[in-house]
Image (cartoon, rainbow, N blue to C red; front, side, top):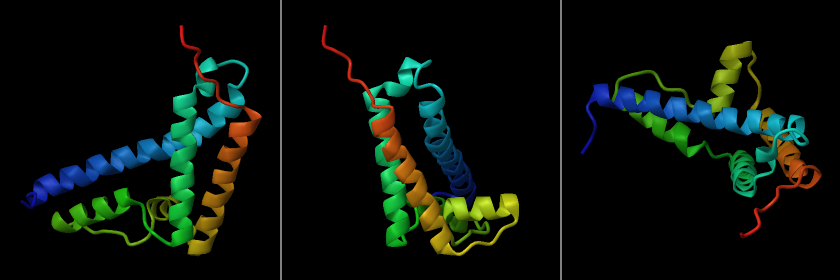
Length: 135
């Protein structure tokens, strides 16, 4: 069953909000790890850190494979169903270029994702996560 155009637009907006939340989690999470390594015990939480590093590795791998994020693909399909304009590039590329009015080649985003993934992986070793001990 296909959603109505109005529902498709609403779902596309919801996916966009989730996507922004994931981007914020990845970026702000990396900052929090380094800033809060001695102040905030939660930044060393194993599950939180594992989620963070796996998500960033997934993002970088997608970039290397030239694949769009599944959230981008889903959002754009819903936007087309709603009769709205859809963008063809990645979520970050689209919104970042709109934000700073900079049109960059795809390889620059691959490099940026890879560098950020390397930073997140480095954080795993520089600020290692801790596992809770069973009580």
